[in-house]
Length: 548
Image (tube, rainbow, N blue to C red; front, side, top):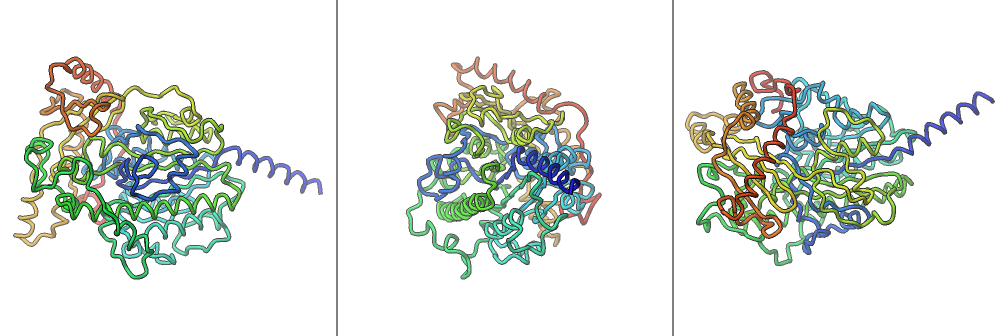
């Protein structure tokens, strides 16, 4: 009897300690521009649950990613490091090393007593052999995800999802969220679990990763008979305006950037919808439909948390890996340093904060690398020295002291698809962008050669070989070592938030430009950090069958 009482007492202490640490749900969308939510003034898209979450938490109106393209941005979130530090991109020929991965937020939280789950998309190659290493699958207590793109109908691409009742991405993810949270929900046979069900005496950390509204998924929407009406009819009876400052390809008179810098003729075909008003409108409708589907999942998640009586101790964080151009100023795609690609939604709903800290907005300069640092701080876990992000917990509590004066963003994905290398620094009023010479060979010419010789086009375009590792490393180091920009831009973000008027050659702003050049030097050195990158060789030469 005494032993039983002691056991209950000890178990009770552990349970209380677990509940003192918050549960954390991190929701990451894909290619979602800042303006694709009702709570920021978009009066077309229907996102009532996301809007409600912003109304009960904090909406950061000046949040930015570090690299505006999927893989490096997602790794920056996981490791809380700038790409210039972590060294992994589509063109880097590398994967995240096991050593580096041990300091990612999921691993650190798991080591400190959190039950962890990963649902949806993974676009971070981790371990020896990247996506085929199996390291990601083993790193979580619950895994229900696919490597690379999911498509709108994930069962078409990944066997792991075959047991789901639903066929569409938001709904399959919703099933998995229920499976992770609730022991009484239907169990998904494809899910990889290290425990039969979530232990109630542990806090949990759940990462929910959408591949929407990314074009790889919205382009595959078919309005099938069994699809929800959201994905067949919503928004299709409305007059949908074109984006502000939209310019169709045929109407471009002066390109936004010099033609030898941003080689638009080599842009990936997946962004060609932005060239015409019809294509842009259709894609925008699909993006909004996808967001409304995601929004429904957010609402269902909150209802489930309340049903399980864990909503009062569960923090929800909502953001995106980057934004996207839809023909604004004649541009399509991402991998640039403009606001349209770097400025993202960031909402944190922490039910534990005081009433005065609920439903607030903050224009503090925050970045995606701050998310991991903040989650670790919330969990009262020691933050590793490798972390470059800032803990923004105090801002979430309604305090005013900000964590940085400048944001640094970069694009190192400069390839045959035409995008230039660039870096930017900005404060709340001014942004400075610098570009480097674009010496990349043309993807268009590569496609022509592939077709001439019968070489698979995707193999020609997407294979990564060992010499590219050296090229990418030079991209990282050469600006710090003195490489000069070939083009510069300066924007007054207060007066010109759409970045229409480049003031870099304006004599009246010369002093501002000179100051921001100095800031750039400080910020890029800080972003690079010290030491060699903790990466592994991951090319088609080293791992020809590793799912690059």
